[in-house]
Image 1 (cartoon, one colour):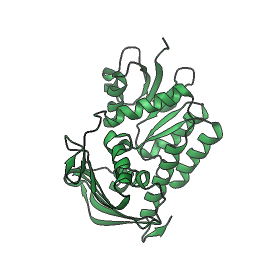
Image 2 (cartoon, helix red, strand yellow):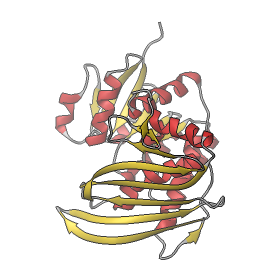
Image 3 (cartoon, rainbow, N blue to C red):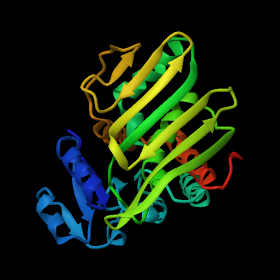
Length: 304
């Protein structure tokens, strides 16, 4: 029986702790090393897992088969480059980077070194969203996309709502359409300081070359919502991540697998490591998402 794959984790904050729990439930994997500056992290780790204080002490190809990056977004690209240079496959939380230049540099380095890298846009690993893509084709193709993601908080100082929440919705739009938007523009509807961070509501308008428009609303000041609606030629398909039934066609529920998206992502990352996978599609998508978000920061709509 093969030994479990040894994974390292950079960052043990809210989302990093989800990785710790996810890996603990997968017997084919072992969390071997975690980089965290929080001394409370030690109590969360399995027996035999080494805790180090800095991510640079994490990167060791003799001790790890893969690295997961769940640190603040500003550090994603630097840590990813270090792992790739060490020849270690890497799973990177969204966004891949906070600039298109950094994102492209990670992609180009991974291609040059032939190291597998995957961006964890969570909803792309949801069985419900994956089923939606097939249903959209069967119902005559996409005519319009409307997406809404909201909650009361979190209020972050390091990352605005556009970069904190936007990668999810933009990734879903790009993955569904398999096109690069012809234009992208972001409108800020309200913005204020709250609890040490920024509270705001923004909309993103995307226009695809095929003529399909996408409207995305993102807010950390509204009631909780995660809804991705696709109007097709002869049906409306809705992915509602907060509903017990996550997928609907014209209001009727569609049964899909109940696998958690993060579990699927980690399993697919591990499978790629085990098989020596070199698929660059997810990394290319991660770059395109960053390019769209960077374009959205411009004062007017721009061609991509």
